[in-house]
Image (cartoon, rainbow, N blue to C red; front, side):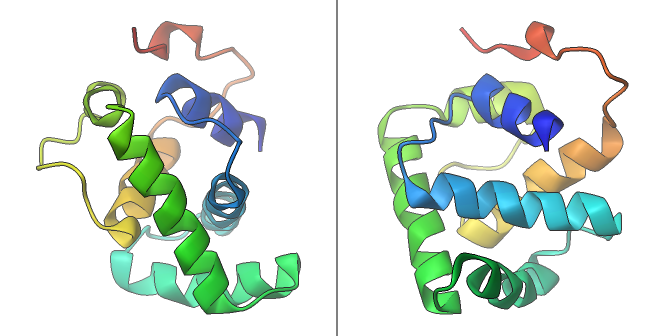
Length: 121
């Protein structure tokens, strides 16, 4: 999970929204399962996260969406693009945001070293 929190920090995300924690949990499930971060499968993880956080899948999705709306509003999209290498337009839908982050984490597994070099300025 440390790798996930470091990546979120490096792309300018802050834990002041529930959606941040929901997002981190879902990314953790994808990484733990070492599964393909398909946008079509991510919706299935909302139910898992809902059970973990004792809420509904719709609340999970809405929490992540609220987090992302604030994230884009603060201008963090350029940082997201710089760190992940994503070339598409921003803001992007929730399931694609999760898929891009999961893909990044799977392509850059943690080796115990800090990712301090990723910090967006």
